Amino acid sequence: MIRETEDPNQTVVDFFFLEGLRYTAEHPSLFFLLFLLIYSITVTGNLLILITVGSDPHLCSPMYHFLAHLSFLDACLSTVTVPKVMVGLLTPDGKVISFEGCAIQLYCFHFLASTECFLYTVMAYDRYLAICRPLHYPVAMNRRMCAGLAGITWSMGAVHSALHTCLTFRLLYCGPRHIAYFFCDIPPVLKLACADTTVNELVMLANIGIVAAGCLILIVISYGFIAAAVLRIRTVEGRKRAFSTCTSHLTVVLLYYLPPVCIYLQPRSSGAGVGAPAVFYTIVTPMLNPFIYTLRNTEVKQALRRLLGQDSRDSPAGSPLC
Image (cartoon, rainbow, N blue to C red; front, side):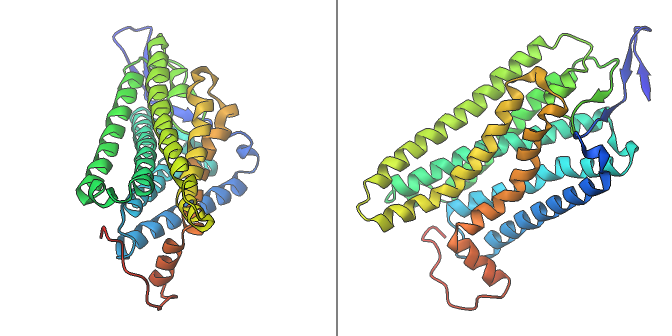
């Protein structure tokens, strides 16, 4: 399981051992069922949203186009981490992950997570155009623009993740193999490197910090303009309707951005103690997103009823952008 290097005094590890989440070892069967339930709800809920948006002609506005991307990202993000956690709860061998498997998991996680970060920014821009520039909205956010913005978010996520994966696994790992975490992430993996990780940590702080801060600033600016525009609406009903289209997005943005701040801005604090915020935004938030968007969105709830055959009433015409 260990490869020899040119230096006889150094070896390169072929696998890592994921220590998992704190307290789960005491009741593995109970936590296995809990994670199975969460994972099932996450995948079912997000796939249901994806199918609903894709099949209902009334949900073809840009907002639902981006919501479909978000649902796909959430389902995939949960799949990158949760199944491995579940296998690790069943058997000690399930906590073993190969060196290559660790690199793939790290790349996929940051690819999906950073793409989601960029997507939230695009969704905020979409809401800004819809509320602050309603007359220009159909032209500014046409099908070609939607596809282009979605493609840019995925491309930027791929490049962002490739950078961090290459920087992380170019280092030599020659000794410790126990990752004090429940999946392969940058901070806990760097702690095992047999080399100076200062450059990696600086790049992580700068790159992730700039990306996260930049996206968050753009989101705040967008919603600042949205709030100003909504307050100019004279009727209470009009203000309530305008705000209702944005509260779901603001809720998931807060759930998504707060936990990573506790992790990536403190790269040396990795371990079981910081597993809680990671669990929240990698496992819990993808499960909550379908409920947040459906419970506060009448159009999605009506589309779900039509999909399930529970609403045969005539529905309003589709979006003018369809």
